[in-house]
Image 1 (tube, rainbow, N blue to C red):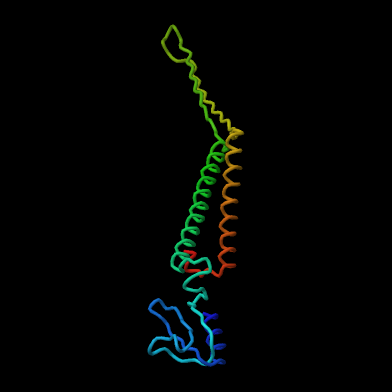
Image 2: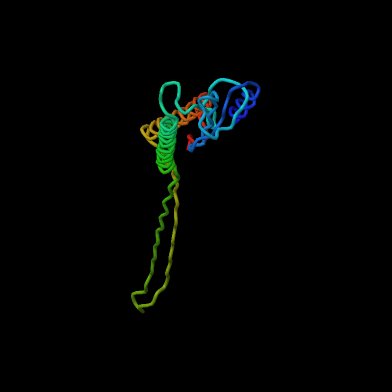
Length: 182
């Protein structure tokens, strides 16, 4: 948008220019003898075709702005999917390590009863009951393969995030509008 305003402002200082916006919202500034009927006449000379993000309809490499937008969107989608997939894999590896290293406890209870009977009278002379409970806890250990898998997944996630940031920097340098990032 700023490029369009700058161009219009600069063009107003010169003779022989006309400006109009086509159906795609592209602002055209051309020599007045090339302008279509009903174009707004400006002062100045020269030619430019721009849109709100300052990129020409036909890019320097000969491609169209629509193709370029689709290409950037596809690259961003692929980069974001790579980040999401690597985050999911790292999370799964973290869960595996956590489950392997969590503390497990075992509880055992032993019960005993004893009776002493009188042989002559059939009566109980003594009776004893005992119960003992023991608990033992032990923290598990993740295997070397689990730890290595977590490190690999973390590295993959970091690389995917760096690739997305590089793509964003490249898009900023190329003045790709934010709407093409989504």
